[in-house]
Image (cartoon, rainbow, N blue to C red; front, side, top):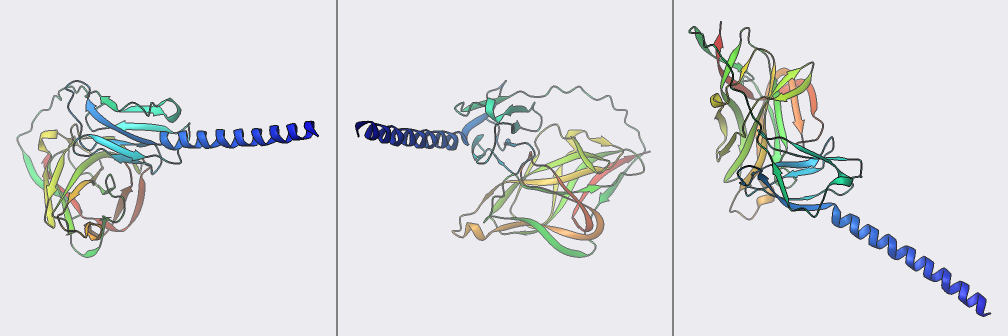
Length: 291
């Protein structure tokens, strides 16, 4: 009888211990999947506003706020997933999830070192506009505050000019903006064989607007010279309003009736959605054409 009682007690203890171990493991896993920290410049020590933090190839990630603070829930990730922290003009950092120290509240990124381009300026240049200006309105695409929107990108591809060009301004047609103001980051990439290539910007270029209609962003200081197709887009990074119905606000880009590429991405390190169709986001560039 005593042996039976002892065996039952041991069985209960083993089951209780197993359940407790599982609960402890589950709790630790949940804690590890939420990260909060600050992203800074490794040289100057300055905070990096709107830096990207997320899982490569998946819709898991977020951007830091205007003070460089990131608070992100990465639930569902596995040890073999790769975490990337990136910022235009800086060297990215990549970690396997199992190697990342979630208790480290400070991440530092080092600035890229760029060589000065040796550019020969030709006298006979001509100002041109190329891209997708509105000729026939065909709807809109964009973001609403009732869903995670920071870091979401919309864009298109602009076909190459017959001659090399240097970019001067990027234009995007805002269809609707119901916030008091919105801040976006622009992107300009190489585009070849229907794939997004290298980022052509050397610095983060932001614009803040409270209006709708055409918005123009100066990129001349970036010294981008190109003689092939390239991709352009905007990424929503922040928005402000004093009105209580924040979740009902939206920012949208006008669509143009034209054959071309529609580019979309929900987080900075997610795989690109590259689709062709007859409704294209309204972007164009002002540039100088050199013969």
